[in-house]
Amino acid sequence: MILIGLGAILGWLGSIALRLDIPGAVLRMILVAILASLIAGLIANGGTFLGSLSLLGFGAAVGVTLPAIVGYYAFATRES
Picture 1 (cartoon, rainbow, N blue to C red):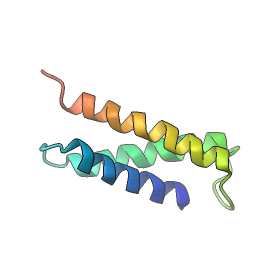
Picture 2 (picture 1 turned 30 degrees about the vertical axis):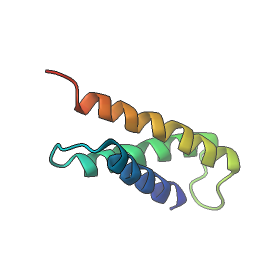
Picture 3 (picture 1 turned 120 degrees about the vertical axis):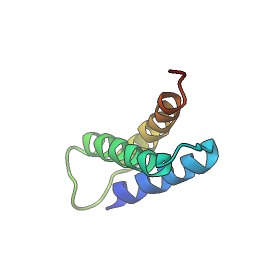
């Protein structure tokens, strides 16, 4: 639950900071951040989803989620 909440908060803050005007971009950014946080946190935490979250897992989740948000922003605003 911590990783999901962390991803949702970081995705929401990223959508505020990057100010996308595309319809539905906020929800997609939150979903991208949740997925990135979950994957990175679970890999760094040894695959444990239930129980406590290590500091390494938390740091990995934050460290991977922020570039994922920027990557989504670059993808969403690219010229066609």
